[in-house]
Image 1 (tube, helix red, strand yellow):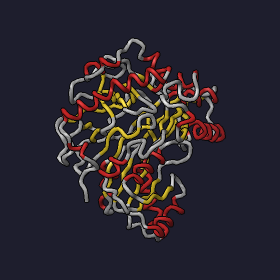
Image 2 (tube, rainbow, N blue to C red):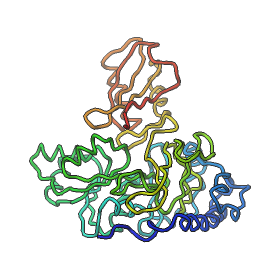
Image 3 (cartoon, rainbow, N blue to C red):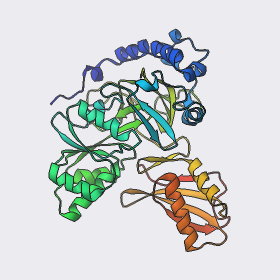
Image 4 (cartoon, rainbow, N blue to C red):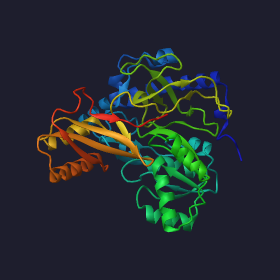
Length: 411
């Protein structure tokens, strides 16, 4: 079994750096020529001069709120695609709403490297529970699985009883999906007396893999590794069997900057992940993810030589991922607008039974069960996630500007 996906993973770091920055001026030139939004965003940039990290750090950061606004002004992609929409493969809609394209060609999202590092190989059957409907998650990992030669069960999320039956019948050796849902499937299979013992490996993303949950999977004989990916950028980094940080993918340039700025921080300091994706269809140049991380010094013991990051360390803003989906402060505001009778709102995200849970704390002068149910319905409609509603006394929530409180422990 080949330890590495290709020779790029073990090349000398200086060779990798030279290769990436030899490609970058051409990408910036292409973006300025074919994508009007990039032309405006990088108006005063000389592409030929951006051949180092120092030069790259002088470019402005594009952040998701800006992308969201520009997509609204210039549908469908805000003028950031370098390939005409008619020549793309798929068009997606993610929560936000943010629209994303997918170009043609195998493994367009660069997920095969992460899939391979997680132990998936040609001939494996894998059940992919990432969503295929509207959002790109399912397609991102599906492409990588097929690129390495796996046979894919395109399950998507939900329908745990039906999926447990499919696992018992089709006997996949691998699972891909959000970290929590694998436990739901295993518990459902146990409840139904369905054999799920064929699953021995997993690649998870879209949420934090808490140490206690990873240990539970290990106790059940399943090796679980993580990938870090976004719908805007594809796969950014992934774990290897060494499980010492996440290794940056070969198709991106990662910087860690001081939140709210474009200024790189010293190695080891926590800051916002800013990513440049070398993608000719949908170039992303210094895209601010809003996620916090830090560079992990040295190289992975597994033999891969690219930069390592410590993984996901929280959000630079209040935007929070719950059960693999982002919940935004703007969504809490949308709930408030639908229920003007309420005072302050605070969405509290926690862990219950190794699963994400959320509770909307709502101030009210006159609480009643009917209004609580209506608020819960609004919470589901706006976030697409179920959550509890707790009515609290008027004036009891802190006046600190925080509308989403993530109380999960990532230790």
